[in-house]
Amino acid sequence: LRIDLYGDHRNEFFVFAEAIVWESWVVIGFGYHVYLVGIQDRTVRTFRLPDYFGRLYKAYGCLIVASASRLLRIEPDGSQSWISDEVGIDGVEVERIDSQTIIGVGEWDPPGGWKPFRLDAATGKRMD
Image 1 (tube, rainbow, N blue to C red):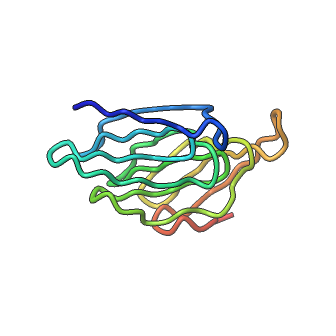
Image 2: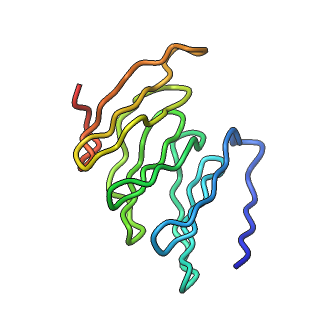
């Protein structure tokens, strides 16, 4: 399987990139997008992020995608379950995920102005 990605360098920041195999997908975070490519059928799903891609987190039966300001939950069938409200403005890091809660920090005052958050894993709504 070969996957070629081309970004719009005039309108997007390419801070981080990551590729993993998850469930039946090759998942790629790049620019302002997350791409899922079906390993068996080559189906492509594309998710536009509100800002630059940050990181991928495998979790309990789902995939959590971090952008500069929000988290996105993707289900094993390749559908989007939710996108959170802003939890940062220049970086979001997940510290712990369990079946009910996502705990992390978001950067609100760069550099170094990180603030903690806690989200409901099923809905993406803030719990703090």
